[in-house]
Amino acid sequence: MNDEPSRTRAQESRAAIERIYIAMRHLFIRGSYKPMGMSGEALRSSLITLSPEIYGSIADSEKVELDGLLYVMERLPKGIEECRNIRLISREGLESSNFKTIIPPKRVRNCYRVDEEQMLIEMTRGRSDIYDILTHLTFVYNEAEKIRKNSLDYEGRLKRDWKRLEEIVKKEENKKQFNFDQANTYLSILLGRTYKEVHEAGKKFAKKKETLHSLFHIIYWMGKLAIEEYTQKIDREITFSAILRQRVGHHKYGELWASEIKKALYEKGLIDRPLHIISANPHSVMNSIYAIPALKNTIKKSKIEEVALILSKDKTGNLQTKVIRYAEKHGLKQLDDTSGTNLTVQLIDTEKIPFSAISKSIQVDLKYIKSLRPVLVVMDYAFGEQAYETMDELLKPFEFKGELLPLNIKSVSVMGKAGILEGRKGDIMLPTAHVFEGTADNYPFNNDFDASEFMGYGIDVVQGPMVTVLGTSLQNRQILRYFQKSSWNAVGLEMEGAHYQKAIQSAALIRKSIDAHVKVRYAYYASDNPLETGGTLASGSLGVEGVRPAYLITVRILNKVLQSDD
Image (tube, rainbow, N blue to C red; front, side, top):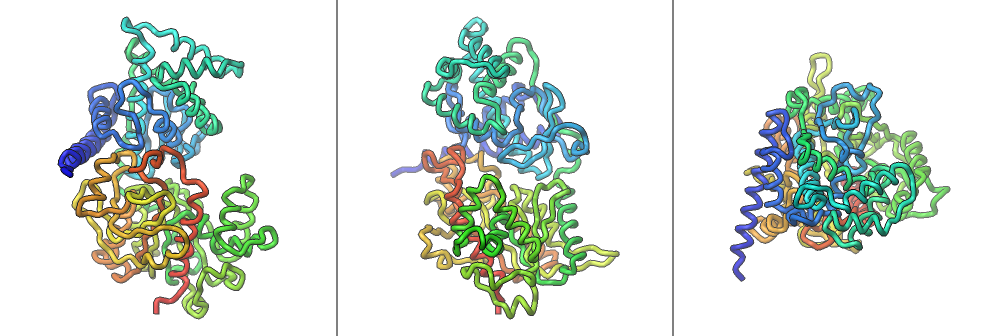
């Protein structure tokens, strides 16, 4: 079969990604742009050409993409659809203001609603964070244009269905009853979707009512601002603060974050101990070690996975609170982030862990623990380029009273979620190399994990190169097929691997601040399959399906770091 057309489409897509990032860099340096101006049009055009899987029907000129809209809105601050002025800022003191802090449910970033028209969004995770939010906003403006076109007749007058939607939104705001069947019918016409599609989408948005406005409200305001810009020339605008433009790329937040960790290690007398860095969901490490002894009188389960599943379903949070309190009495110290990275860190002194009471599935060399007393430095998931900034700063020696104190780093283990290219949600991927999309930066390495260590648990495991992408929301089927079927033989895609490995190799081979033979371990569980219909991130989260692979990887990491290499 001739696959030349598909290769050509992949090349077009990669060129579109490059144009998007060049345009974003230009606009960031310039300081502002109007989404419906020439610059914004260039971004929208490139995004439509690319047609990422996560944005579904973005290229359709009439149909508004509903799953993609839910995905994006969960990563943007509540109420952003009402704001015509959006300003991206650095951490500039607003945390001490009287503005209410708005935090999106699926992307931890501080946002502030200044007035009825302006939203400020803190960008403290580097360029990846900025590109991520600009991509999401570009999608929103593109879909708003569809709503506008579907709401005006050929003479530019508002259609009856738009006026009826406006009445419904006003009733909803005033907590008055309205006919949902009628409302969904009006909405289906304005969105170019079927009644059933709108009805199902409305239910999904309604489940998120604590963090999102209703679908009626969001569609109305998206359309309202687009219509006002078209008919009254009231422009929408995105701006970047001068402080943000000065700070990006200078590791300001990563340096503050790493300094706090090293200071805490020093003050606790742990700075000279063997250190094992683990990038993972902090709950999974803490629960794997402490949950069984902490809840022995509450939950009669002996398997970590079973206890973790119960914890994940506990809506009150009471069980997790018990685990945290127990852990804090037995070697765990949580460092809440004040730097702006939004990365929580836990320090675990293994000397204080009650090993006789923990799960038998965690294998421990007690002689090694008693002799060398290693310390676990558990950091939350980084985001894109933030992984390089934080790991690069963390691996540097600690500066204290004019003296440099090198850290005794023994291993770096990374557990993350990733998209799989041949498999299904919940499968495990073990990378043998990180291929950085759009660059010549490729990082082969010796992964201290092997597939045989994960066999026999009913979870499929694949090994091979993984692509570190510039953004998960900028991937389409053709690009992913190219990485999978070409000589790259990629098994999955994620956003941090190459950045972590770049920092580790720089520290080990160039700066010589850590041992050149430091152990590195990478293992990812599949949160989605972007090549599978209904398998993208926009189709919904992994949920409890992610508990088994996440805890299997966590236990395997602990089995490595709690035993001597000798």
